Length: 621
Image 1 (cartoon, helix red, strand yellow):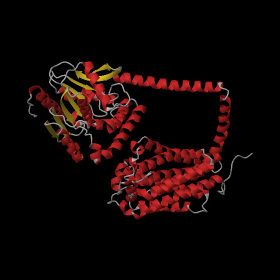
Image 2 (cartoon, one colour):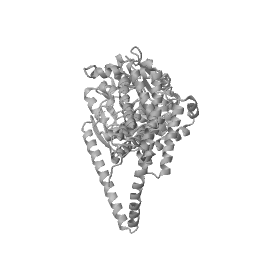
Image 3 (cartoon, helix red, strand yellow):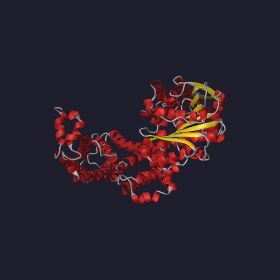
Image 4 (cartoon, one colour):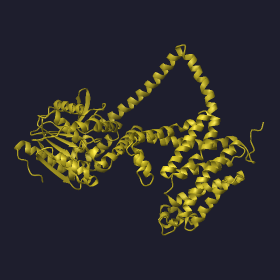
């Protein structure tokens, strides 16, 4: 029996699929070429997309062979390239074109697409890339007119690319806090590039609607691959929802060409679904019935459950072993020492002997105790101090979420374990400023003074639009790093910036610490507590008099957000005995981690200490 199929006439079902792929894609490609031709003067040598400048990115095109290709990309020759692209797209829309002609035109679209990508380098988007995939699949299909399996593979390639694109887009949104809480919707539609004023006005003050839109998008994109195996009516529904999604994007975001590039894959998706879906369902249903029949007797069910338990247990055990080895390795890099408090190991860097007030440091979020290295090195050699890592945030063992009351109780237990004597000077950087207020609230007789280092304010998310708008992106950053360090446990130097300014002996150790997913998991938990219990608890401390307090503010933070300056002045007003200094050239992290600026923190601590021991604070210099 002859297994080859002659499709020279172009009459079989697969040929109709590729005609549809080519035709739909070519509508969008033709629109794109017209847009480029109407603005073709921007490609002139003295314009923004001039080839003399853009060609500098391609030194190979200046060689003996490359220079001939480069001539095609020069102005005005590149106009002919666009016109050729327009003619090829038009030809693919003509019903009577033969397979050979269509293959040549699809190849022309692929080649011209690569040439324009080289010519432009930027300004292209996902629709251009998907159009290339569609044309490449169509061209490959024409190379095997008598090989059904090869032609089916070309269709499957387009369908698989389409499904992976939707699914990965959904996953990337799922791991984004800004998408999960819906804030991304309003933020996208307020932009000038992809925004729509009317739509933004509609969703701006409707967080529930934003969340519904966000989760509908996530669910729709992640469910799209089901079109490959679902029954025909369900597949049509999924493809219909996809088309509606792109129509909405065209209307509100101006992404009109995405309709044609992505919808151009739908004939291939539908075709693969017709072949793949029934076959998989035919195999899956009998298997499911067999399992159900056997498990009804009990023995198979026990075996299945036991096997699953063994597999899950083995996987969990392996994960636990790997995590334990990683923690052991990283613990060896930790400066300072470990103290067991309440059955949990806590990492501390401390001087437990000396005279005068004890200085207790509360770190910023996602910062280990090493951030205070320059500050502690500048303290008087006889000054007792404690810097430590909160659970998971650094080298300390992680726990679950800690409310403000639980966090301050844990700190008090650590102080008692180390035998540190009051009065305590509480020093808090960033969110640590909230916790030192909570500690003072519960231990008023033990706290002699406080130092706020570019501290968070309990009301900053309500009163500062800049910080409120930035919160979802902070969540997303923590989540991204949490995932990244899980899959790449040896990645280091996630943060350059301020950490590079720490003492040399601390830089490597701190970067090692930042490679721990536990740190970023702890940061996510602390961020959640900040917005629920930490801010509200700190707000209860309204008067710190007669204690001396010092407030240091990073000048660059104030430059970026004027409201921050107002909030810092309110912190200084918490006591009658106060000192407020703005360190003009410092940023939020550099105020602590840069040697130059950390000296101002040390000077503020000395100012508070002097006020406690002599009753007369020394002048800040």
